Each structure stands twice: as structure tokens, then as C-alpha cells.
Amino acid sequence: MVDAAKPDIEVPAWVALTESAKPFWVGVVRARARDEWQDVDLVVAAQLAQCQADIAEEDAALRLEGKVIKNDRGTPVMNPRTTVLEQLARREMALMRTLRMGGRIAGDQRDDLGKRKLEVDARKARKQVEEEDDGLLA
Image (cartoon, rainbow, N blue to C red; front, side, top):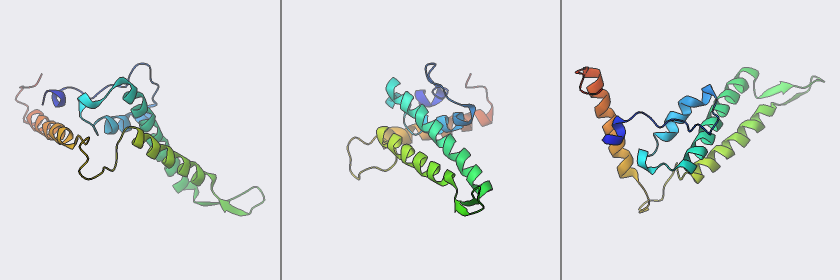
């Protein structure tokens, strides 16, 4: 409950993150309980957030341009953004594996889902209290 009452983990000062990646940062750091994050993990978390932002931007551009475009000679070819998106998706999965995020092995004792569930529940409780606006939280 104490960790959930704290603001989200900030992007470390030594890490560069674009504005478009900051919403992804929040999602990434909320995927674990606050006390699970080490400094080295935060660097990888920032890389993951940036990768996810890049995926969103490339996907939006691909949707506008189409998967098949015409080259300089007018011949239909696969849009190169498709390859870029595939590379970014592989990078995203590698970063998620590094952070041990995503799928889990059933019965794996290293799994911290209990902590994560407690923090999610605590965030919900905090939001309810804030919505009631009793002034209980400063």
C-alpha cells in the first residue's frame, strides 16, 4: 500500500526518453511492484518504453502509407516500414525477456504476481480515495 501511494517511478536522469515514450514508461514500470525495480532494470525499462513508442509511430505511418507502395520506377513493393516494425517487435520481445516480463512458467516460484496484484489493488484503492476527495491523501 505504501508503494502504491507513491508517485510513479521517474525516468532516471541518466536516461534519455522522448515525450512520445513517457506514457509507455508508466505502463512498463507499473508492470512490476515498485520494490522489484533495480537501477539497471530502469535503463532497460526506458529502452523498452522507447521501443514501444517507436513501434506505435512506425505502425501509424505504415497504416497511412500502406503495406505495399510503389518504388521510384512505379513497381509495387513491400513498404520498408514493415521490416522496421518486425525488427522493433523482436527488440521489444528481447527487452521484455531481459526484464522477465510477459509470459510466465506455471508454478514458477520466482513469479512476483502476488506483489503486483497487491500494488494494482492498492492503486485502485488510492484512486477511489482521491475520487472521493476527502483530503485524506496529501
